Amino acid sequence: MSAIAPEHPSAAERDPRARRRKKLREVLPLYVAISPFYLLFAVFGLFPILFSIVLSLTDWDGMGDISFVGLAQYQFLLADGRFWNAVGNTFIIWFLSTVPMLFLAMVIAFLLHQNIRFTKFYRVAFFLPNVTSMVAMAIVFGSVFSDTFGLVNSALTALGLDTVPWLSSPWGIKLTIAMMVIWRFTGYNAIIYLAGLQSIPTDMYDAAKVDGASMRQVFFRITVPMLRPIILFTVITSTIGGLSLFTEPQVLLGNSGGAGEAGMTIVLYQYNQAFTQFDFGYGSAIAWALFLIAAVFAIINWRLVSGRGDDAAPRISRKKEARR
Image (cartoon, rainbow, N blue to C red; front, side, top):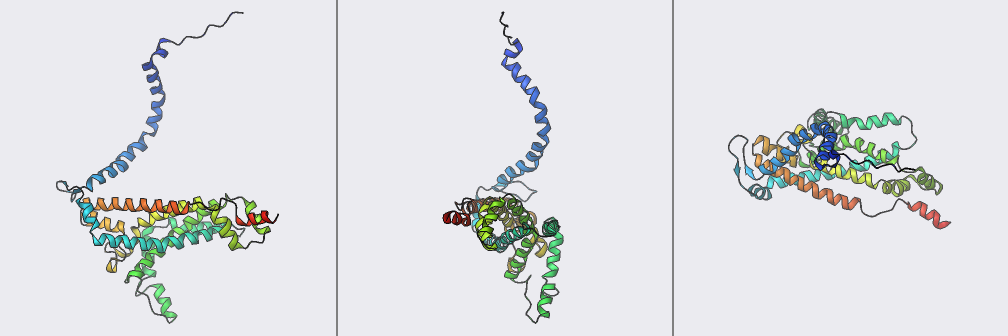
């Protein structure tokens, strides 16, 4: 029985350069197919980011020559009282909006996860504010919370209570902006939580019902621990969004930020410096300071929320096993 002679590679296949050219011909159409995304990202994403770093080290009004000033913009930023006032306003509005917003979203998602009628209708209704025009919503809130003809103050007057200067007092401005954020993003986060709830095994809820657990116990001892990754995601995204507030105070109060600049957020202040005062160097420095603040807060939230906790074994089930 004769052995089959092995096939010897051709000279072209033995040549490394020929193999590289062949491989390039195979993958080139794939790179060409995805190249539009990377070209657009390089022009409208990567280049502005890198150029903003350069601008933060210069003094430029957008028309004349660019003057290199080194770290002078950042030194001025550290001593700028208006910037730190904007930082304080942003953090207060973030706290007033994010904490109740995520808690309400969790409760709404938990209720929607139950066997209730018209579930699809409620899901659409809660998500609708997120797709509503932000400008239109700010105008509506400005009418509802107006100091003179607002619906809220009219209701307070009808009840014999004192009116509240919602748009002319520091805390009234912050509360109004916070309520706008809560109204817009509660349903959005509730839908995310609902998707996480649907991935939790129903056996845990059945075991809790057998043990006689109340709905409150089920919520805090099963739902919340099992949703820790989802909670981490919503906390980080809500933090980044809360620190980047712009449309709400800008449309509601204008570029001034309201009385005493109580609604002046970091992004609104950065917008004023860059596109009203035409100080693009200082505006870029504020933008990178905001990036640093958001990154630090995201890391802190990551460490707090993703800490070690109940490892998907609810206490109710552990008590049941102990009784056995």
